[in-house]
Amino acid sequence: MSDYLFDGLKVLDVGSWIAGPVAGTILADYGADVIKIEMPGLGDAYRNLSATAIVPDASTNYMWDMDARNKQSLSLNLKTEEGVKVLHRLIEQCDVYITNQPFPLRERLSLNYEDIKSLNPAMIYASLSAYGEAGPDKDRESFDLVAYWARTGLADLVRDTNAFPAPALPGMGDHPSAITLYASIVTALLKRERTGEGAMVHTSLLANGLWSASCIAQAAFVGGDYAQYRELASKRRFPRTMLETADERYFIMSMVRTPEEVASLLASLGLSALLQDERFQTAETRFTNNDLFYDALQARTLMEPAAHWQRQFKHHKVPAYLVGRIEEMVDDPQVLVNKMAVASNDPSIGGHIITHPINIEGMPKKGPEKAPSLGEHNAETLSALGFSADQLDKWQRNGVI
Image 1 (cartoon, rainbow, N blue to C red):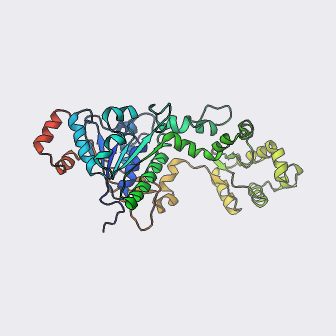
Image 2: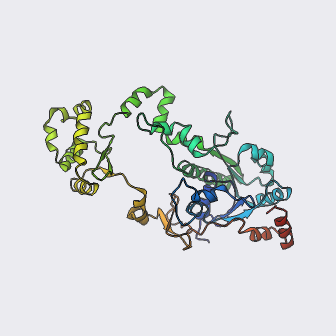
Image 3: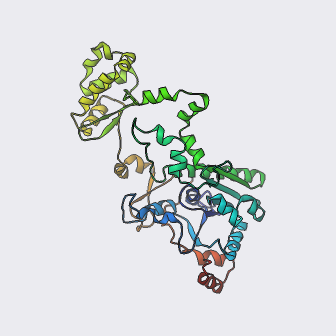
């Protein structure tokens, strides 16, 4: 028996960018054979994002290596009759078909679930869309920055008062959405194991963004008062605030809640005398006089650097936490010990690779192998389907592969 949970599971990744394909990456990490279908000569546009000016510069194609690891690449022109026939052959043999192609493209290529279900009734067809499988915006194309982050109101909910809506990071909504698609696929595989029947599963960036915001967004569906919420959120109220230090770092204070924790915080700051001031003796009076209380704390923390306050907070057992910088995650023992980032099997990738947060005790993940070059596995994949070397040469000349 293989060490890997999904050894022998055949997956077709007929998608691009992040959310759909990364569901395939998770399956590949657990041993599935994942073939990524890409346009000859062009490939997935995500191959190029690491080299753009909007992301940190580095010597490796770090986004592609992270998200396309452990896959095979087959370049296949689905605009040609031959290319579609090859894809159909692969569909006949696959267990899982993943796509985030826009619906109009699926329609033109006859690659909707109902179009190809008869080729393999036991297949799991996994669809990732921007806005859902139906509705007036079904056919609109979008990225997570729009459908997940902006459309759902997340960008508005997390912004500072009077500031522009907060921008999101690339992939910030895609990776959680990929987890959802993966969960849907695994659920359908369990159904197939029990019934022998395939299934279509689907999720969208919009649905995942709304779910991410749901603890606050649910209030809108029951008539919640957002005017009051925004007014309260606009004030820097302790403990739902941050305190700046002399070296421009910040501590988040939202876990300082009980009277004992407030007393410990004030002791760590050398401000215990504030508890003798009737304006600050209870949670109610601190709320009423919040601005004065906050200003007193902020004036004190601005006198010393973050390292000083970390020692103080630790000594007094104050549940205040330094707002991290992403560079600090590289050496964070909590990240490394728990294998949130793991060493690559290929030294050309460099450093560690951030991995998905799904862990099954006793079920290992494959170490990250370098993401494939475009069409790297053409010969291997197509010869396994019975096509000759002469046929492959002809297809390459004609732009099929």
